[in-house]
Amino acid sequence: MPEPLLEVSDLRIRFGGFTAVDGLSFSVRPGEVLGVVGESGSGKSVSMLGVLGLIRTPGAEVSGQVVFRGRDLLALKNAEMRAVRGREIAMIFQDPMTALTPVYTIGWQIAEQIRAHEKVSRRAARERAIELLGEVGIPAPEQRVDAYPHEFSGGMRQRAVIAMALSCNPALLIADEPTTALDVTTQAQILDLMRRLRADHGSAVVMITHDMGVVSEIADEVLVMYGGRAVERGSRRQVFHAPRHPYTWGLLDSVPRVRGARARRLPTIPGTPGASGQGCPFADRCAHSFAACAEVPPLTGGSGHLDACWLPEEKRTR
Ligand SMILES: Nc1ncnc2c1ncn2[C@@H]1O[C@H](COP(=O)(O)OP(=O)(O)OP(=O)(O)O)[C@@H](O)[C@H]1O
Ligand SMILES: [Mg+2]
Image (tube, rainbow, N blue to C red; front, side, top):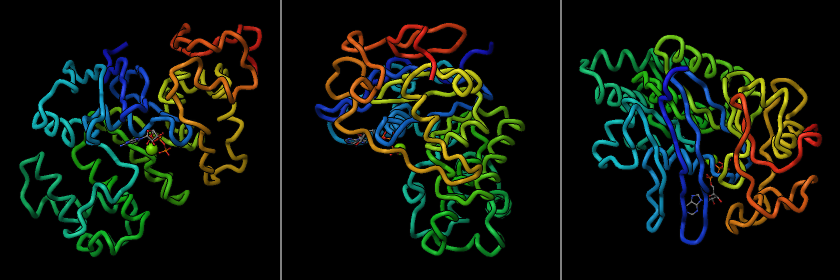
């Protein structure tokens, strides 16, 4: 087993009195694809922003440890963290406009990203930008390279942002819903690009998605989040073939049956997840809850398959 590339321990993120991430721990090994799934509001985006030191809300509290290649990222100075972001870790944000500047052309922005991390000429960086745009499925990339973000459709902007993230061959790519806005064909191209990033550069990928179909195609490991916590973690096989947490059962049951169909967004959690800090966060929606659920279940298990649930073994079948 290689050493983890990224090891997150007991990450907590609070906004005022609201706990968005509640003691999250997970690790990613080099070359591994970790799929992170969970309903809207379960803390997927916020936890990854926390990992990258990008929580900017005044008064937000972030604690825990985020060790990447032996360094605690939460302890780095801003300038050091900026050097890590983009060069060693790239992030594809859920909203592509956050990564694009409206006043520069798409090609210029990709080329600058390349030149910020590599000593190459403007011309070579532009050529590479065109190549990357072609790879993410932008038609006529040698013309579109000079377009401004507002001249791109939402799906094209998403692809441009993916091109930018892939431009420096990061050791770790954190992709937040990178394929949600895309049609099935483009989605398949993007998943291929991620596989190639891993094959050619040994990169690891953290892939946040609502789409269990995407996870089943690309992930080696799966992390299921609920209410700012990990409720299940295991290999793709373990989680898809022998899911242990009632919440994961629910997620798998909501997978659309038609292959290739766009995944629906899962329903929002009623109430405020994790805010009370009392008991299992899923208890009030769980068909199996019982007295023990008044206490928070720890994440435990064997053979790399962990879950946070008090249900006895004989009740662990869907
Ligand atoms: N800056 C912020 N200030 C206050 N609350 C926030 C902030 N950012 C996120 N939250 C809250 O934290 C919780 C988790 O949000 P997050 O964006 O991580 O959800 P998510 O799992 O990514 O959902 P989605 O699937 O919809 O993207 C939500 O309840 C959200 O309202
Ligand atoms: Mg999100």
